[in-house]
Amino acid sequence: MDKERLLEYIRAHFTVSGEAARLIVNIVEYVACQSEEEQPMLLWALLDGTIGIDRDELLREANIRRD
Image (cartoon, rainbow, N blue to C red):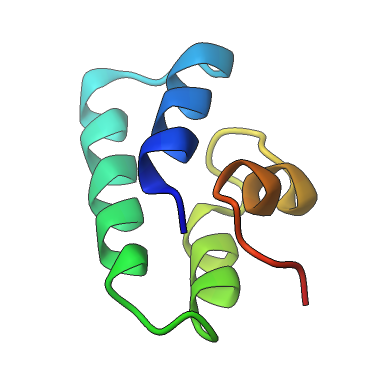
C-alpha cells in the first residue's frame, strides 16, 4: 500500500477539516500495518462514506490490487 500517495491524493482532491484529516491519517497508518490481504477490505470499510471517494478510486490511489 502506498500510504503517502493516498494521503496526498486525498489532500489534493477532497476538503477535509483538521480533525478529520488526523483521523484519516490514523486510519491509513493502521491499515498499512495490516496484512496485504486485509488492506483492501479494511481501507474501504473504514473510509466508506467519509469523504466521497469511491472504492476503485481509493484502491487505485493507495496502489492496492483489486479483489
